[in-house]
Amino acid sequence: MGIHRCGAMDAGREVCGRAIAAVVRSLQPPPRTAHRARARRSGFTLIELLVVIIIIGLLAALVGPRLFGRVGKGKQAAAQAQIELFGAALDNFRLDVGSYPTSDQGLRALLVNPGGIEHWDGPYLKKEEIPLDPWGHPYVYKSPGEHGEYDIISFGGDGVAGGEGEKQDIVSWRGVKRAGERIDQ
Image: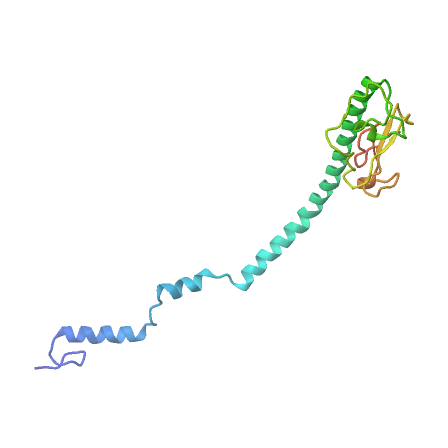
């Protein structure tokens, strides 16, 4: 019996092959289990999270002001539409009664007969109360008006006469003034 190259006795190449395989296995790192491999790959690094947060912050800074500007324009459009609905109701009132309600009777005359008015066939509005403007202020009604047979005014976001932007007055005799536009009264 001779000694084989791998140092094993002549038990053959099989013993030598097993010895080499054992040495190779001992040099390799232990195999990862499927659970450990998934756990390592499933999380995000701190850098990745910071990048995502920065991107979201930039988008909010760029888009946010544009969206908030549209909220003010939406309120102005809602006030203008409500004033036009009041105008239609006032026209129906006039067709039935023969005149518009006085300033003292106000818009409330569209809901309840102010007393002693013949041919009143209301209510002329679907709601049970006169709605407030989109900013929570009451509409101002004048009859006779300075700009027509009646004037209906919403004093805008600040609730006082005058103003620009969201604070401008919304009135029955003209549309909403847009930025840079000049409307003569």
